[in-house]
Length: 26
Image 1 (cartoon, rainbow, N blue to C red):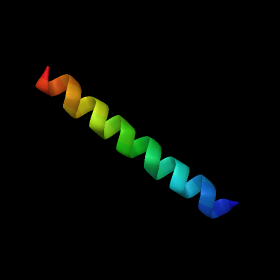
Image 2: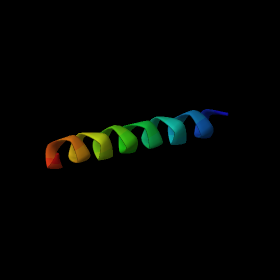
Image 3: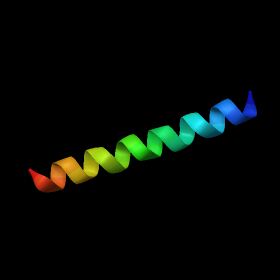
């Protein structure tokens, strides 16, 4: 369960980072 939450957190950060990059390119 803990591992899942950690992976979810990392995934969320990854998505945020990608979104920021996309917005920067725009």
